[in-house]
Every structure is written in C-alpha cells, then in structure tokens.
Length: 107
Image 1 (spheres, rainbow, N blue to C red):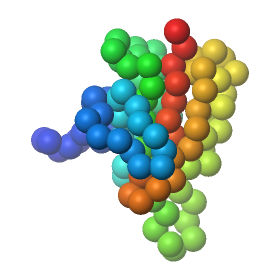
Image 2 (spheres, rainbow, N blue to C red):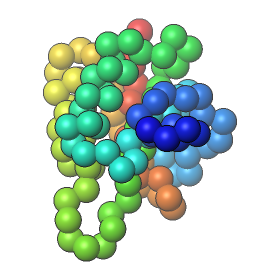
Image 3 (cartoon, rainbow, N blue to C red):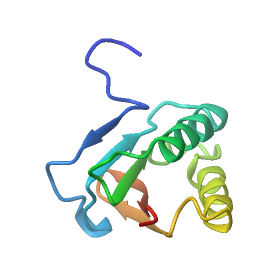
Image 4 (cartoon, rainbow, N blue to C red):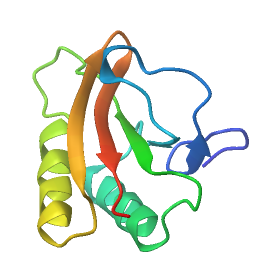
C-alpha cells in the first residue's frame, strides 16, 4: 500500500454512495486479488469498526474485457459470513463509479 492509499483499510464515509444507499464506513478493495479481498474482509469481521453498523465494500468496476471481477467471489464469501453469523445482511451497490456491497454487521 502506498502512502495516502486507503485500499484495504476501513475508513469513515463522509458521502452517500449513490443508488447503493449509505454506510458508516468503507472497505476499499480496489486492485486486490480475490485472496487479498477475502483476507481484508475476514480481518474487518474479526475486528469490526467500533462506530460502524454498516460497511460499504468497494470493488473495481468491470473493465469491459470479459475477465471476472471480484463481485461474484466476494459475494460468495459474504454469503458464507452470513451463514456463520458474522454478517447480518448484504446488499449490492451498482451505480456510477460504485460497485460492491453494503454489509450490515450484527448487533
């Protein structure tokens, strides 16, 4: 991670996320591999942000070259976290410049 790069770290959100609604914090997984994304999500769930009930997980938008994006692998990983009780709910974000999920944490 370079200086000033918030990718893979949780930070407070100060603006609305368009059609996806809004969240208390953001986990940006831009430029990450599926394995790196899963590790970052697991770390966030192991030590959730104290002041956040909802977390926006941002992913790279489709590049248009036909390669798989992180949307499906991350979605499957989040579904397993729901089954484990580590997440209460998820909903997709898909609007201008925002692709990913809003995750509702238990509690």
